[in-house]
Length: 559
Image (cartoon, rainbow, N blue to C red; front, side, top):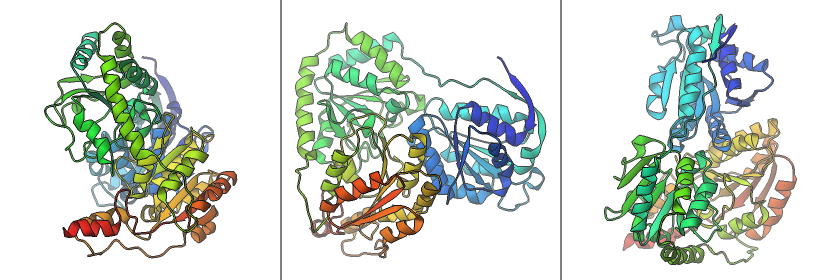
């Protein structure tokens, strides 16, 4: 193994590791405990330090950057306080399988264990929401351990790694040795496993592919498309992984997430064989583990061995990179007798159901906002390769139910359900993909949690378009509240905020829309402004979800 050796400080070694990974953005709120690292970045022309308004925003930006590039997103914060604020993005990366490396400044080594200023056992604090945590105590081991951090973040099921850096070691100088940059391992299924997979499929009458984030992470979208077309098997996307398969394709039959129509979930229930690839069968995808039954045959392919059988015991579980698996299966399928024509009819039936529930008749309301018309306008006016991010909230169900993602890697949403993700997520994506149109969708509750990052977008000349759907409530929780405790409203009403005026104060193009007839013009102006933009969309609180109003929820709860 060829090693590179240089004399440098601990901080310079950290930055050298980031540079070797070809990462050009580091997101942070500055802190005195890692000023040496910031100063080392000052001297590194290939890396830009993005200083945000809150550590939560920094971690969301880094996580979204990781999703958009496939490289580990890098975030930094100071000691216990900064780390605690940053934790939401680490948790999001963990549940979303996003590569991420977090550097946290730590108390000087000689002060450790005395409850020093802002001291927390950072490696232990983050242990349960990270793939690996480590505190570096010897300066000469920085290259070894930081390069290991990047390797772990990228390998297998990707995820976050947290590195604790005592302030004193960052200024120390020593001879540093750097190893080669690790390649992402891509385990491949054996030919015998592939034959077993096709054999199990051959006895199926109604097979269904459920595709998840592992497809995106391995750049397997084209291989999945080829496999589905070759086999005539319908494809359903797991929660917030809509872009794994073109939604306008005849074999796409919807997604399973929050607020999914029952007729689409029936596709899962009716399938006799489920071919799951790159999905962990999350609580949301499985609708609270309710739509898959023991009578169904499960073929599960995932890059992480511990995912197999974690929820459902598969008849065939295979550890493999999704792209490697699909390419092998594509080669074998040509010479394997399968009931492909019989499956075509099943796929057509389920596609018809999908088209029936997702069709939006075109109309224009001059006196109110119809969320479906907002989504229709986005569909018509945004380029096919535009990237959408979203926050947590009921508003996202309209996006999930009606927007058609036709291109791969055009959707970035947190499967963790974290509020506040939309705006900073969009900033991180736009910085990763500056030539793409990037639009975020947020409810007023989540929007207020990270609205300050619009100023970050202004400062770094990052022209995103942020949509905020304002109904002056925590809508998702209000929906559950009305289902369980009808009319006993507590804690879910919010005050009136004029987001348009707030946006103007933050320096972004801002416009308020109270009718969907006005949205198209507002969107055109926002896209043409060439600067960060925000459109505030005034929504009727009664229309709380895709499928129910508040009145309907109350009436149903009384029965």
